[in-house]
Image 1: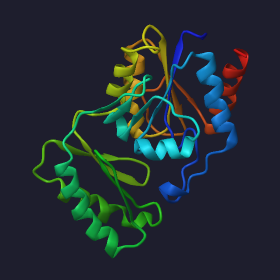
Image 2: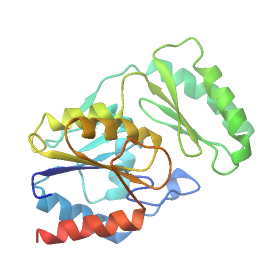
Image 3: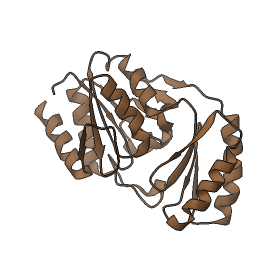
Image 4: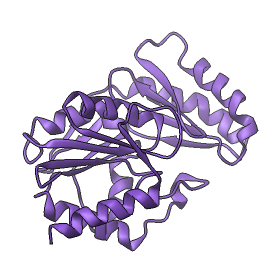
Length: 236
């Protein structure tokens, strides 16, 4: 693999270790160093694909501002800095209001409200998972435009038809990604859409950690960081 690659990288569980609460993740200095090195070697063809809001990703990765498919691709910033949105927010606001009642009743639950999705985290108390799952499905009952993604100790309500795979495809149609080989790295079920898109484009897909996957390769986070650093350093 040479400079013809384009890297698409998940955030939580891939660039950073998953924390008990989303705002508590720690971005190590070597993460920023790695992203700078990859961006330099690949002439800017590096994008973050994450469920996080765009502003949150920017805060964690400051002073870097990278192309990003935030909120699982529903909010996408291209390499020129233009931000693209394709969803209606009203239905998600109502879901957030319904689930906020549950989160207020159970302090161990954390509700993360974004522009295009709502995520209910139960990592603090896994035994609340079934109750949270039931509440989330009840909150979207009858709305065919919404669906639930069951991730690692998190239930996320998303707009149907928006995912990381579509974000990857959109990037691949633009400079500086166009004509390159997509390399997708991620750890969770939400990354499977992007693995499928990368595979379809003849690219490389790498799963971080355990679990069923469409990815061609598998490693752990330290293994990925070491490999990616060696790749970035080889171009300097």
